[in-house]
Length: 473
Image 1 (cartoon, one colour):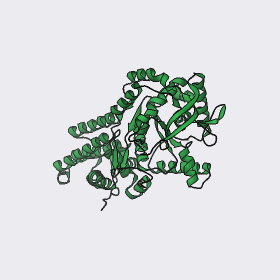
Image 2: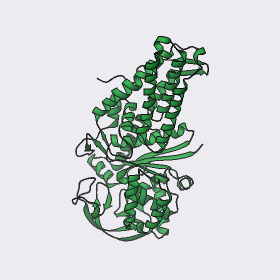
Image 3: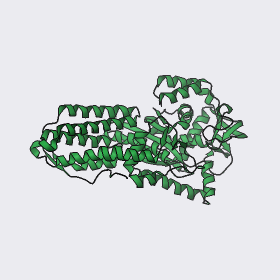
Image 4: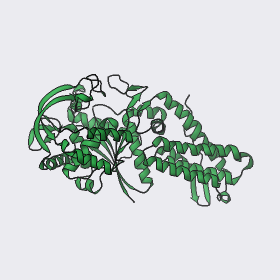
């Protein structure tokens, strides 16, 4: 049994979760569930990033005391993930004492290494990212992600000697060719590092909300320095060094933080590095980027209540290739629901369970060898595709197996012959479909496997259920 540590980003609490957040978190949940099926011991972390100016501003708009506001929003995020079947083993908040203590400890380690110094910052700051930004990164003078003009800031800050780690990072990338996926993102990271790294600000002046700089309470630790450390503070420094994260699942807009700044911080602090950073793309709604100002963010709980949690999970994982940009359309969700779930999986399940009611104990002997080979092939495909974060292709393999089953039914016509080998083969195929679906569609998987109850290797009870996915008109 292996130990596996999987993380999502921690999410800002300046607003409710939207469907883009759900996509990243569901993808991480699939990995966690899959590893548990393999018998691995899984630590699965998500949480909330609360030490930001965005949080302060959101609490002010809500006319709430900031602690009450963050408590309320953190609970909302927790409940959302529970509603979507997320099986995280921990939920961290950056306002917790366990986090603040580890942040302070890592700051001190980096300071003692000589990699933090005080200096003057004169440059651009993007409020949307809560990050400093270079002039060369702007398009038409605007942040390419937020389409806003950065603010010019001149202030005294503490700096981290990121420039010192350029060669070490490039050497690390060379020794770990799959550190960032997909390859296109890794190429961007390597190119950025090769172009030269500059030291970065890791504090902002002022007291109040946030984690104070150790021994200098006139400065607060910069939110991104603080936030990255959540992956260590959730498990503790010793546990991290014994087993760092196997995979950070993130959006591509924060890949530089995770693939450049984070490893450099860890090297400086004398800590182990994560094994992989798996990035997904930007999310749009009907072709338009999700934006609070446009009011087009979709609450995943609304979709869950309308279509069911497994339909939402299926659509996001099947429709949007992990690593690329994706577009959410409710019309496309309906098409996938009726086509793949109701007509495909739902109808096949109903047909097989109806036929299976005719089996007796004496019939539970032989499986068609050709179908047995197809089942084995599907299992290998799913395993291979999940190791590459190709969730959509893994699901396609399962649906290919369902199509194989449908073709087998139509060819053999077991309702005419009552051929026990054909019917038993179909039951075995459906049972395996249920097992393969567990990481992706856990509720549906449970319904299928409950309908096929193996009393013993020679006794089977079939219990027909309600339609898995009633058609939507």
